[in-house]
Length: 398
Image 1: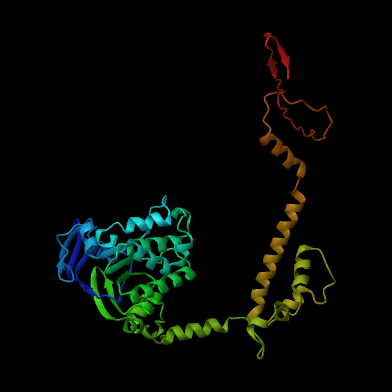
Image 2 (image 1 turned 90 degrees about the vertical axis):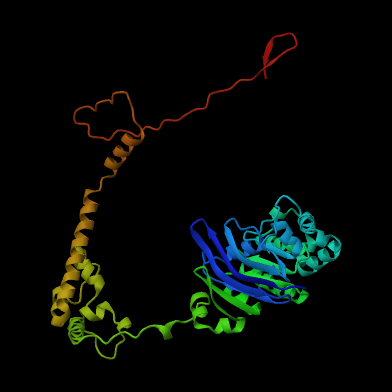
């Protein structure tokens, strides 16, 4: 079996570069992962290797010494490179078995089609149970299994996968990566582009870091998993150690902060701030203050609000006075709304909006101040009669 080698590969879409001088290698029986942010050029890399890139491609691509630069996409497939594109790309109206058969149509795979099919079904037992099911009726994870199985039916040497776990649940992603480990055990080389850095590094042998169209780092998967840059960018690592230490505040700022703290309400020592109640601060009851402000006494206050306010320290009395004033204002507004609320007026305005009329409204007699009765218009469906025609030509009601 042959290794895939890429040297100084560059891809551009018009004036916009997607890859610059990318070099990598994938040997049979190993998993190589490409890590990178969206737009870094990962998908363009796989498409350029597979011969399906729409941009301008430059550089050297070989498989076991065979030059791939001059080959078409189907010839690259015949040479032993299969790709599972992002989005799966299966034939949704065909069954699982039909999708797999299409994957085995390559000349290099025809002689071993049944063996390859058995290998795929052993790798994905769910597909074995659903060979006659239409592919589009399957879940996303099962469709991804169909896409990988179809690619493996071509009997490849190198299997390339573009974001295979995209859109899958954590459970299905775990099953998918476990299946890729078995693919490596079969002897295939796997070039994996994946956003799930944690799980991909867990099964990979080596990895490359692709940033801003270039390979910036290459190492074993375990070394990449321990790299602070990789942890920070792709593994959600703690970056607290790398954060700059805040400068000491200036003396003037410290004095202003101390003065601000001095103006805060006084809390008796020994009491936790979160447990200090408003009643303890104002030496009275909040309910009593609200009742007094609204002019309705729910219970005889043990201490008038003015006495409660005067009992406070100078540091908090102004704060409480402002709170009481706000409560009194809110109570007055609530009382005014109750006195001015007129349901009949509201009903009249509602009728005027909902039931426009072109006829003149009757005028009430002098001295009659009663409200106009509510008029409800009822729509009756028209009656439909059905008649049948007799052979004689006359009609009779059905």
